[in-house]
Amino acid sequence: MATDMVLHVSEPDADLARLDDLARSLRAELLEVDATRTVVPLETGQAPEGARSGLAAAAGALLVTVQPQLAAVVKIVSLLREWLVRGGSEKRIRLEVDGDVIELTGATTELQDRLVTEWISRRSHG
Image (cartoon, rainbow, N blue to C red):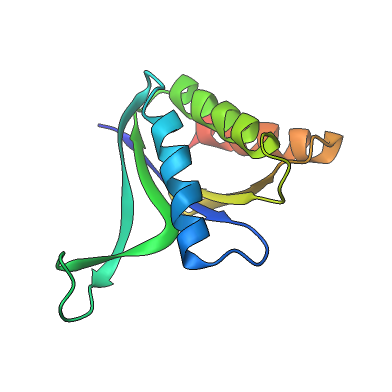
């Protein structure tokens, strides 16, 4: 058994190419975490006719499969928060696990820290 996490990276005024670059950068870092099993582009359905692949991927979206332990989720969330702080842009990540969603930003506010702690706590009870 594993835990699937859906990540949507966004940035104000980013075009599809920029979102793809951000997702690739994040994917490379996620693959370095020992708790990570797979990181693939999130497929959204059939690709347009003539595309190389039969499936379309959402720009800036990743499907991350991690070990089913809470510690794995904590590692991934920590990496996401560190990644958001780097680069100085206004990147955001919408993170969803089993329908439970949290929006992460590069802000290091007390409120965001509390929200992340509460979100992770719900994962330990679910």
